[in-house]
Amino acid sequence: MDSSSTRRQATRQKLYEAAVTLIAEQGFSATTVDEIAERAGVAKGTVYYNFASKTVLFEELLRHGVGLLTASLQASADDTEKRGGTKVEALDAMIRAGLVFIDRYPAFTQLYVAELWRTNRAWQSTLLVVRQQAVAVVETVLREAIDNGELSAEIDIPLTAAALVGMVLVAALDWQAFQRERSIDDVHAALSRLLHGRVSGRG
Image (cartoon, rainbow, N blue to C red; front, side, top):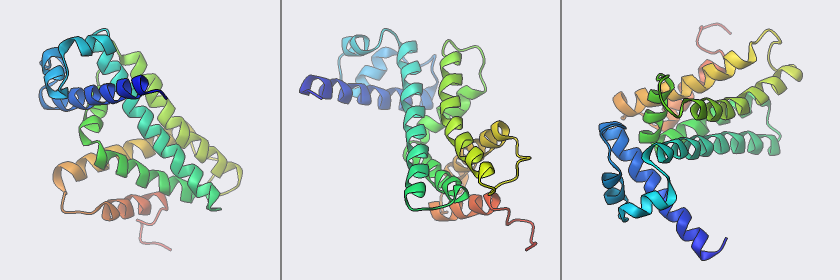
């Protein structure tokens, strides 16, 4: 990557970070391009040079953030496979990867979860696409776990994958908001027990 491309990537990253922080603080409608530029430390024209509008910036922010999450989930699954781990171990590693991501990007996660509930946004179709990309990584591992006999063939793969992703998102946001005294290891251990079915007191 040449120096100009590197600079542009760095500028876009600053704009993403400024936008996600401001929008998390005061909402999309109340956040102006001027404020985003000021928070990012760039000229207003720089925002429009990189993104045609505030809406386009937010749409690309969703792509960027969920893309990072998806890559993190995939990397954790790949690393488990390289170590010779099981598919259930890969799912467990993905839970931790999701928690690490949310701990690093809490403002983005809050925005992402909030936007999932809105259906009247210009970027709704983009949000559905990027959400499916993240869930598809989990679906693949579930399917492989069923194929090799680790999990029951009765599992509904799309719904279970969505439930696992949702569990991590909601539990992590609750941790961030109300249980900050807990470590990431505590949260991961609790979710891991759910994954492994160790909450009934049997076995």
